[in-house]
Image 1 (tube, one colour):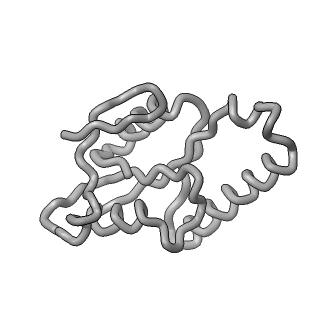
Image 2 (cartoon, rainbow, N blue to C red):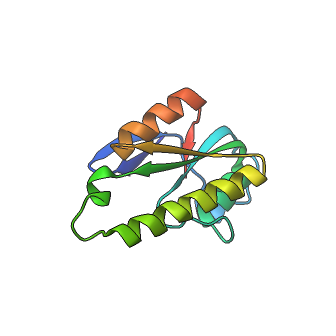
Image 3 (cartoon, rainbow, N blue to C red):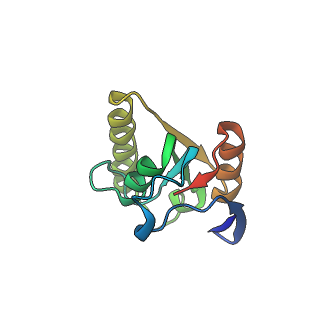
Length: 124
């Protein structure tokens, strides 16, 4: 069992494959979560590639931080651009037969709940 830190909270997750073991097919997960944060694209996405190598099923997730979006430093054009990028990512995933779980709140709590609902045992 490995531990992942999300914000100020640490919780247990099954160990995601490190780079040097990325091609070792003996370590498989039935379901893994790929947590999209700043990199909202599919091409050349390291975590997504590693999850694809190690998982039978991938659940893609994004957690909105309401405090960040309401920050004085984040204006309407930035928020608009951000939501356009999320919509583009979701569209690209849907075109490939997948989807993007978009949640709002504390990332640790939201990802833990998603793992329970989806049966995921790894977080990338």
